[in-house]
Length: 193
Image 1 (cartoon, rainbow, N blue to C red):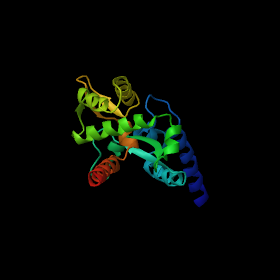
Image 2: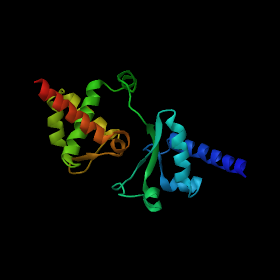
Image 3: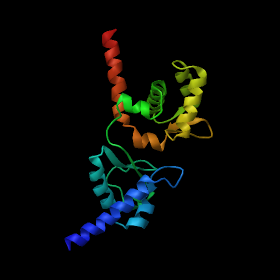
Image 4: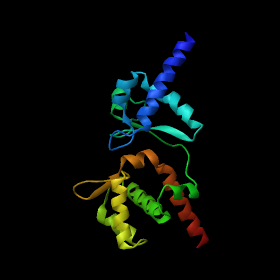
């Protein structure tokens, strides 16, 4: 009996890995309803087992909800609408970040953009963000980077040129840690001044 159950979950883990790692849509990952369709209604358990396995590789299965994150345990309907994908569990070293293909000033601009939008309660005008970025970067680079952040899914822009945090920021950026780092560096700057 135990061998059959182990084989059952091994097969589901393999399918879940294929669904999460191989891109089929514009956005990486897979919706909960797709996982339920391919893995069965116990897909959250399969993802938990996969997440435990990926921990050794410093990776994790991340869940991003389209609407606001549920306060308590998400319902099956909320999980069906959520997007699941694999991302880093820890952080990149400076050397690893270089290999990703982003310049340090591009990453700094992204951090500033995200922090500014967070500070404005999740919404800021594009003009405000452009002005902020142009204080530290050349105009052409600030515009290019902002378009890049939108194209890569870190920022969303609506028809009124309002900017919001994108799905990728929600999935890849520890927003609380970012704010704490920025506040910590601000406190360090004011103490050293």
